[in-house]
Image 1 (tube, rainbow, N blue to C red):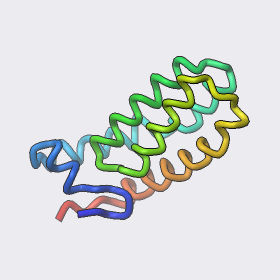
Image 2: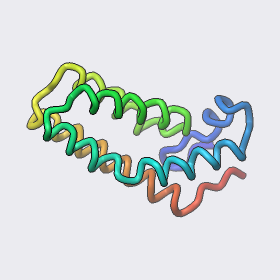
Image 3: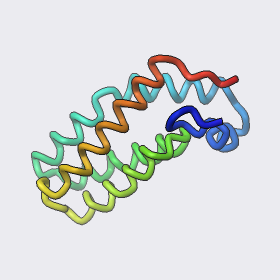
Image 4: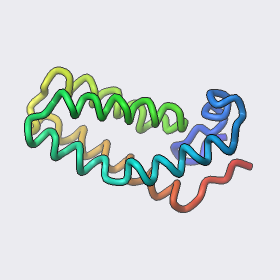
Amino acid sequence: MNHSGLNIKDAMARLMGNKNLYLKLLDCFQKDYAQFDTQLVQLLEAGNYEEASIKVHSMKGMSGNLGAESLYEISRELEVLCKSKTALAELQPHLTAFSAEFQRLLRQIRDGVDLG
């Protein structure tokens, strides 16, 4: 089951079929990560690449658990770039792609995810 960006079948396998846990993770994601993209940019603008890398690593794990494959891949790439302290100007296209996918996923979660 893939709902435009969410591979729910994969996520359910990871969570041993626990739909309640998946719904709880979706809820936590939309609440706890709501300002993530803005916070990430602020960290990078301040030159705090180490903390940015840690935050992106956390996002990579959460998006993987949710089955948000596109966000996972973008986060994986962004984590490598943050760890290598890539200049902010060079990071910009990656940050734009990240933010677009992140906001799309938040909208999808807020609109409701049908687990069948």
